[in-house]
Amino acid sequence: MQKGRILGIQPLSPEWFRYRWGRITGTDVAAILGVSSYKTPMEVWARVTGKTACPDFDAPPEEPEPFHLRRGRLLEEPCAQMYAEETGFAIANAPGLIQDAELDWLCVTPDRGIEAHPMPGGSDTSPNLGVLECKAPGHFKANDWDSQVPTEFRIQLQLQLRVWGRAWGAVAALLPDDFRHRPEERNEEFLEKVLGYVIDWRRKYVVGDTPPPPMLKDDKLVRSLLPESVEQMVVLPASMAVLAHEDNELKRFMGLIKKRRSAIRTGLMLVMGESRYADAGDGLYIKRNTIDVQHKAKEAYLEEGRTTLLNVKKEPEAVDVVGPSDDVSIVEITQSLGVDSLVDQLPEAEALDLPDTSANTGNRPLTVMDALKRQVADLSAGDPDTDPDFQVKS
Image 1 (cartoon, rainbow, N blue to C red):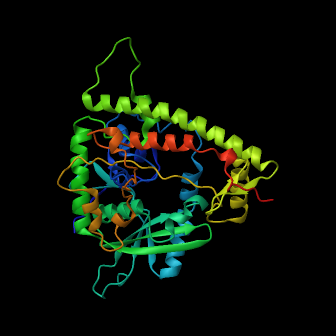
Image 2: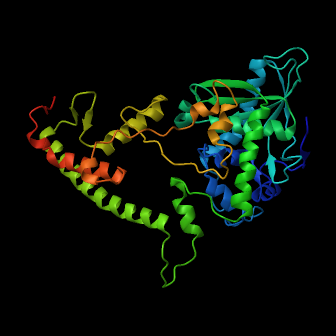
Image 3: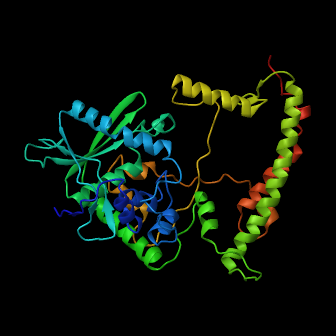
């Protein structure tokens, strides 16, 4: 089992930040695969290619350390100690930054080493040196750990096992009111597919100096990378011209929908009078002042340590992850981890149950815009103020 090169660079030092700036790290791989909750493929690309300027890490930071990073840093040692206490395994300090033995642009920084004999779930002859990755999620991230270790941290651990040359490891999580840990063996099939994907991604986007497909979170980054505009005009290629027309149509219909929603909400508030809540049936409850209710629900969440927020919902982001290789898909990569694999956690595209508008669209295929038009038409046909089934409960 090949071991990487130990560089002797300690975590969070100025040298550590500088060395990682132009390279791909363990957490970057999850982002490249599109499953990171902290960064996007384009953010990784901008940093690795130098499009995002490297800060002066020797100078005092211009902004304070984000709370979630500070929390994770300070709780790393208590998390490691709790793991040692629960398992009986010895915990050792990790050597700092490690560079892959074959890919000099790949490096990892394990949190701790583990010394155990035998390996959990193994025989007496199993290798006894492992890797421990420590996490300390807050209240709003605690639900991500209900069923199993989040996808991105399993990917991070697998990369650490490869680069450090160890056979097994564990991810431990010090939750606000619980402690969980899960051992995992090194998966060679998974690593081969992941690294094949990352090598293709790096060749196409980093070496080719071409930005990867943007995600929803990349708006601010893209704006920062654009040069100042000048008085000239470009002709869009056909594929982008179609998107431009779709965007224009969406903008128009979003305005119509916004106006219709405003009229509906005004009518509902007039009917509700002084009542803050209304029962619309089928489990739908209306709040007259949504902002106020959400604010109080959040306060109750923080004070009482609840794991869910009542009636405060967040829509998931739906984005396409476009890979650089036609031979290996992300689904194929993640299937190699078995039944409870990463693929079970990846978002799946939902089929749209669209109305049949073929009579109105001729021979062209049904589009999302057709569905939006039908939804606007359906909304305009109803009148909530004269609905005899709408009742306000005191």
